[in-house]
Image 1 (cartoon, rainbow, N blue to C red):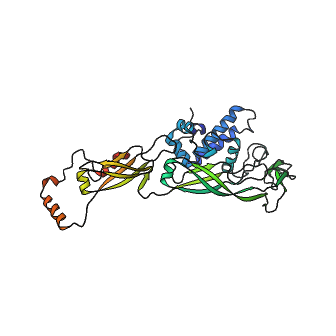
Image 2: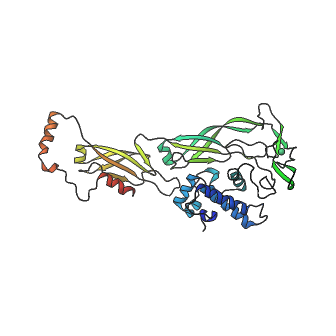
Image 3: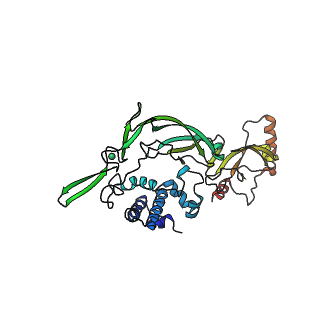
Length: 377
Ligand code: ZN
């Protein structure tokens, strides 16, 4: 199966500019206006758009490169990304991507000149809204539903729209110019309706120039387990509404996972510093450990060395794609007391001469840093 790089005809080391250029070429080659009724071309057009959608986004590209084509496209995003999950790119999405690629209105090469899509009406999309949601590490570990208040622009009650009289609803205005090359026909988005083909008919009191009012709405956001700071979720259609028959923008949710007082996160693994006293290290004991799903008690064997790392399998963070769960790594630190009573001091002084207290690391005993290195190699 062709991967995204093959689809765009580029190598894995292609730069962002090369990716963009390759996509532009494919988009022109397979554009539906240029290949009317050709389903293969349309299929290729969509594939190129999907490839670009992933490869042009640094985070998505990194995940794609890590998972490979098969896992990335079939695993989907597991509920991640709301309606914007993989494989769901409609023509509207693809065309809305073009502003970025071809620059506003400057695109030409087909469709007769200037306007994209041969003078077709654009569906106006409401503005995307952005919010930041912060959650605890515990919430990130199991997933959570957050309700947030969002101020969205919505069509005012009672507002009506009518066909734009300037462009007759086409969204485009055509001009004929006489030039030295002869008569040239150019078209541009209608500046009365902004290309939507509709204008406001009846404006209710309090509505803005587009017939919209600001309304506060409580939006429920399902946050999947395993999210990390700076991941972004998309709640489709919960951005601003568009005037007329346009489509609503999306609500983009930036995730922030708060630092935990005792657990440090490293990808899917968690680290915990455990302190044991000298007698506990010598005699052995059990200790309570903080995990993201509550406390657990673990045995500490007699004679444990400072620097030892105990691995609690599956007690880390779940992968956001649901493939695996990380571990909790418990770093053992033996706490050495500083101020001793006279008796205590005498006890340790009497042990100074005892050869049993001489450090005698076994050959297999690795240093702390070597162990850490092993763990992540
Ligand atoms: Zn118009």
